Length: 168
Image 1 (cartoon, helix red, strand yellow):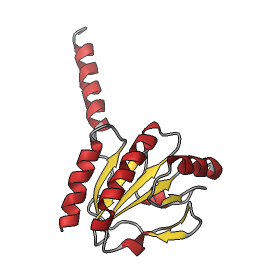
Image 2 (cartoon, rainbow, N blue to C red; image 1 turned 90 degrees about the horizontal axis):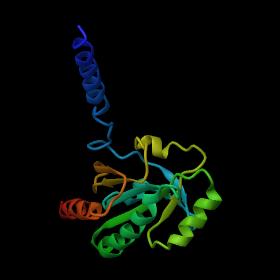
Image 3 (cartoon, rainbow, N blue to C red; image 1 turned 180 degrees about the horizontal axis):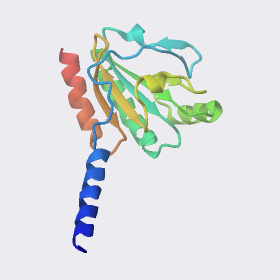
């Protein structure tokens, strides 16, 4: 009888682990939700303005440590592939607009940076839960790739996906 309890614990633990590895909701294969956000420069940008181009949409926050590293990588990707039809858009989800602007200014990226502050639903529309989060949208406005977090080497995956979408 004593052996049955540890076995039961193992079964419950395995069931819990399997349930925690359930599929994460994703936007891949769905139309990218349109939005309008104010940029660092003060103008409004609408995602649908970029229909016909490949869009890399990056949600970030100044307090998400990987955001700084990823933004620098995305700036290089933007410089390399902008003429080929890629648009990189950064979206800050910081609640403190002043601090988000200071961070964005300090990063000196060349792509447009927008602000989704004050509980806007832009991030929710993309099922944003953790940051940074990078979304690739094809020329017809369909989400084709989604990635959460950033570590060295992720840029190689982004480049592979971007090249694939630019060839379509």
